[in-house]
Image (cartoon, rainbow, N blue to C red):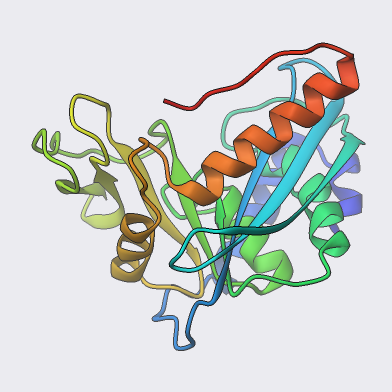
Length: 232
């Protein structure tokens, strides 16, 4: 199935397709160097069909921005928890196809396998493009964990029953942890180490922080407003 076909799916059909894709997930060590890392994010008003998608590319581990691309797209797939990839992946794929350079690894603002059916946005996009991906989420969707100590890089495994599906990572003192899970073609341990290397004093890693700023600027520019964004 192509992402362009997602518009035709019912929620039950989307869940069935997630269960089909689940069989293809590869959580395994990334065996090539990371020289360029990407960050991807989506911005939209909850009940709007307009979607603002962006990908930003940075040198790794320097975190120097080298390129970006964005699109304004539309989707009629409903806003349903656990199925957001069906709203977001088609627009992100449009952006992906606009990039002159493809990153060695892409970090997405959302879940990887820390998802009821292990098909968060990072895993879904990784499967569609066959690119290594990591999910870096600001909130938990699935999994139980002990609160990490209030120290930078304190971490705690996230469990779904007996399975470790992610890591709660404290990236800044006195801030809530972020939730890291591998998407596709990278290990759990590597996912956490990469995200640690992408922290530069903010709560969220540089790839998704810059992607967030990018898509919100695109959304504001599209609406004709002049607003500044900051991600503490």
